[in-house]
Image 1 (cartoon, rainbow, N blue to C red):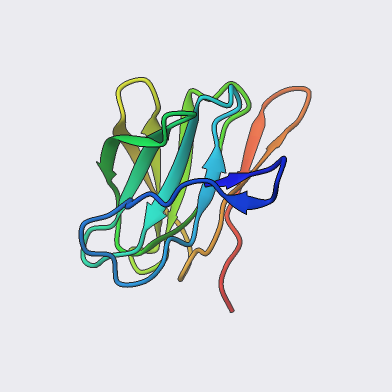
Image 2 (image 1 turned 45 degrees about the vertical axis):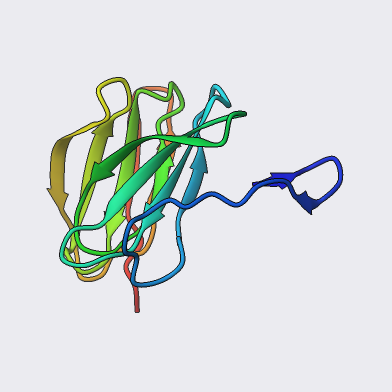
Length: 129
């Protein structure tokens, strides 16, 4: 974690048991109370839920193969996680800390963006080229 007042490392947090690489996705829940971090591992990656400001991992949520990017809905009720090698997106209910849906997408999704319109939320998953 970085202290944004000093731009210095405030804490180092272990987020996964056996990652194959460094965490590649980080998102702060809109209420600012939790930070989600993707842990690339295969065949099942995980998302660590870190409670701020205690810097403690409060949940580890299994998702797909090599999760790399994530985003929260504006209300913070859902997190969408792009799983690079699974070619899908996991939808996490942030209150239960469980995957409630898996959405098949194109080859190697590398991120998730959520765009709000007046009528509804549209989800966009960029494809890795």
